[in-house]
Image: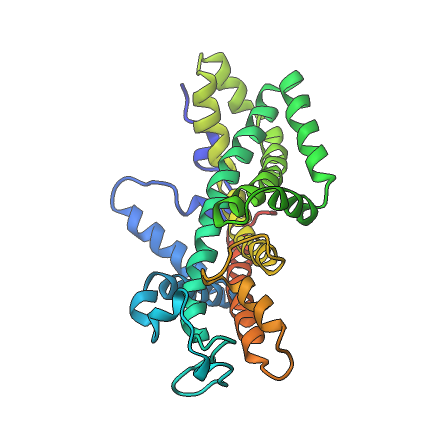
Length: 306
């Protein structure tokens, strides 16, 4: 079968930089790709912020000044202490170090991101491609289901599901995943619908290529750039949704350190002990802003709409 046009011309400009190359030109191509990315200060700033969040989460046992404060620790003599050298973000209503609990809270937030997007993105991408490729009844069933779920406000649907299930981290993942796949399904369906009409898809069919080959080798690579951008942007929103569920008592439960739960608990003591709610809230903002800046930078780099 002749080489598919997506190897050179149909992929978004930025993604062409990452095509596997033979010979000595490969490293130069990757170097040029990084050079283009590094020239975007917004994307670089977002990448640095995300690296800091991930590093803090992974290195939490070594970075946390008071690791014993992660669990059911109580010291009423140290409660409501303001930020100081001993406690960089102060202490909460039972004397636990807020900075320690924030960096451990990043672990919960990132685990939620990995779990939700790890479930919803493959499902949404697969259903979107199947609907666009096979069309007919398959397309009607998948897209009608997708439109029905899109008509329901996402937060309301997540709250309803979380309220029925036991409030745990894993159930919060399931609640958010249940509504998140349809966004990726709609995006990939729109992209794949235009790809399946290309001449090289027809050539692949006439040459006897299997459905799996056409979907995985001809259609999916042309969607990777948009999926990457969408997934990066979605990571911040997943953190926000998870924090919202926890804030309302339907997500991660105490004493597990969770940013949304910390904001909720600290809100009871505003404005006198402002740090107990504001600083965990700023930690949420930092992570969300990092993913959004990185996603915007990748969108400009790949020159796609997501």
